Image 1 (cartoon, one colour):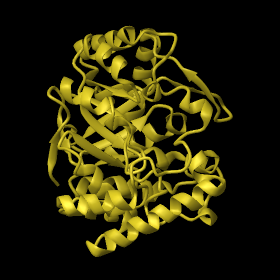
Image 2 (cartoon, helix red, strand yellow):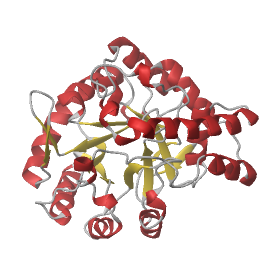
Image 3 (cartoon, one colour):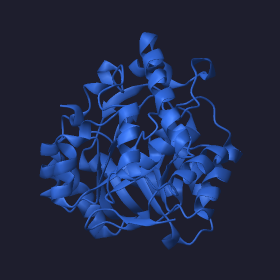
Image 4 (spheres, helix red, strand yellow):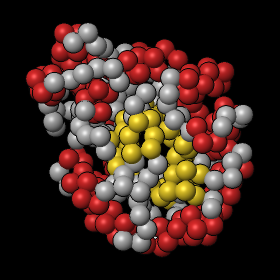
Length: 330
């Protein structure tokens, strides 16, 4: 496994990260034993970066990871945690709270659930419209000074907010959706992060399975939030799956699957970009790992982009209410 630096001030991490959200619902029921086995297989393959959020499964995801990392040398992996999203007992979402006092409360619970004395990368999940980003970052900086956090990251923020955050404390990375069919960061956000020495940890590189080559509408499970997102609805899904077939044909010529071509394309966009795959089974992980061996020349990259052109996707990546909460989309 190759390594990549998370910005000019961040840690060295594996060139591929593992996102653990799907192991705690969101995409339908998950198998606990298979989830832990997948995390262990990721470690065995050289993956060091695990990504989670304290609100994934209302803390379940952190407890699951805590069990999976037990006994592992602490310097052999990095844990990235998002905080701030508010949930209710029915699983509903109720905005964000990134006040410094709330952040310290969230962090204390995270440390306990994971069984750790520090978090490698800590970040607000979304911009809280009621709290200036300077206050949030300043509060996390206090936790860096106290030793509970090693590095500060951001998530789904626009260029102006990124600059304001970086003026308070060094930022190692921005976590944001980036894939063949979600390329909005290329216009303003990516130039900004590169100017500031901030890396990108790219989630949604397979558009939550949509461009994996394995998705079909009949596979949707109870509790799978994708069925409520625009790209999976109505005529949008048919349009988008046609793009996947075009990608599959190009990938086949390179001896790759559609998923591997999509992951390899993201990884090829710069050494400052770390794709984060949401594999929750070992077979999915094995396929994703195969993408890291792919060597794409300029002609290959052009063919992939021709199969799935920028802006070709039908439908937004989130529902309207969620899109309105994304500073990165403003």
